[in-house]
Image (cartoon, rainbow, N blue to C red; front, top):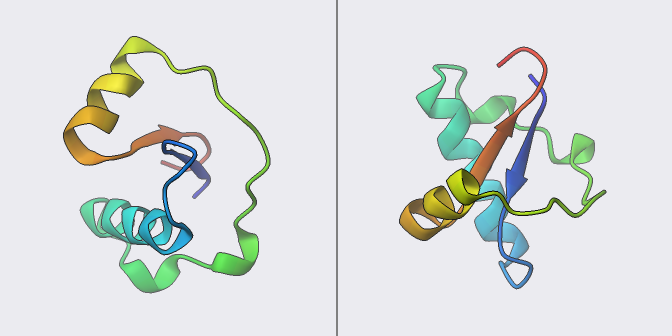
Length: 68
């Protein structure tokens, strides 16, 4: 699975990984599948309205890419 976790820039890294683990559990994959060695803080995303709504509600937005 490949997905991005969109968060406000001041979000602590441990919180970002917690969001990723929650997402994987929701998908039925299990949080042990999150491999931090594959995580990159590689780009900045322009925030769209639906992303902002999720961030306001949950603190993050998942941008699903491959295999989600």
